[in-house]
Length: 452
Image (cartoon, rainbow, N blue to C red; front, side, top):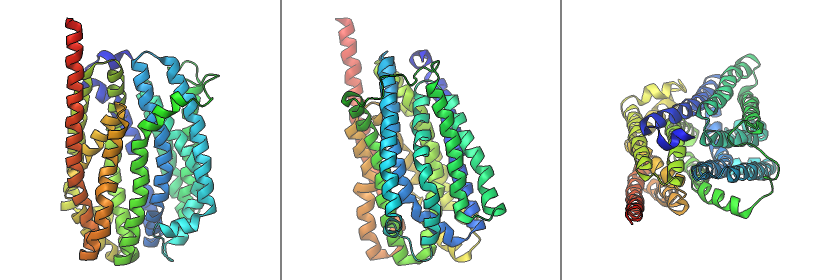
């Protein structure tokens, strides 16, 4: 923890980001590879069915990050302030709420699964695949929340490499089990879901063992599980921003899937699934870098070392912008080669190639938007982080999705993405300027206080 206070920012960002990036990229690569296995081993309808499940997965992830992101940011801040006992209360309250939320949403999904999948765009062809995948994946969603959320707390409390190992365990098992269940046991799309359940269960067990170990910086202790308003409200306030992103993603995916199906059928739904998979891989890299930035910013904000947190932000923003620019170049220059990874169906290849070209030409600025949102979240600026989170997917993308297709049909859907990116970039710049001015005032007031 002392390194967060004094080590060079570049070294710290490397030390914290590389394990986070490697871990989350390994998981994302597994997701990509799993979808390749499903596409090649089951067929195009299975890819469309998988795309329909994305909104359901977003709801699960939303509850996970509501607790996980909020608790990790608060842990960094209170450790920077020297309040370790408070960090233990954050940990105890977080696991209780994760179990409560998980039980509730899994129960709702189990009772109304087919109507929910229909709402999110499932057709007669894709519904059986979507149903088979989700009915087997549902029990593992709460385990996934435990793994991912507390993996973030592990990193925030000073264990970035161990957090990376957690992700390696899950991804490694999945890469082995997924093709085994699909191609050897011929279990189809449900085999991929079972492989994910087993892998996440092992990873979650690894994380829980760490937090029950009394040698860990922050660990489970008696008396910290009773819910406290003073502990929960800051967690929920900070976690609300990424939670809204995922919840909004659920709504956006439902609108996209239904609109795309209306204008392009199952082939277009499968194409949006390929687009989502490719861009999510890059966004996962960005999230990993931001996870590395978060404990640095949070700790130094709590310790009132403002120049260090600003350097961490700008370095993170530069790295993430480069990554998104590379994705833009891939989508514009080699869209067919990217699509061939998932299918050799000519009709789907043509649709996917066109979709990638039209949706990625402004993707280069998405990384900066995500970094700004995570920066605000790390500082505890819940309202600003929520506004940033809402801007791209709700304030701009949904209205565009509801209006442009009426004029340009399927092309209107594809154009909605770059246009919303432009608008959200403007919001990110404005919010960043406001926050940097606030930090400058804090620096100046501190200097005046020292002089006095």
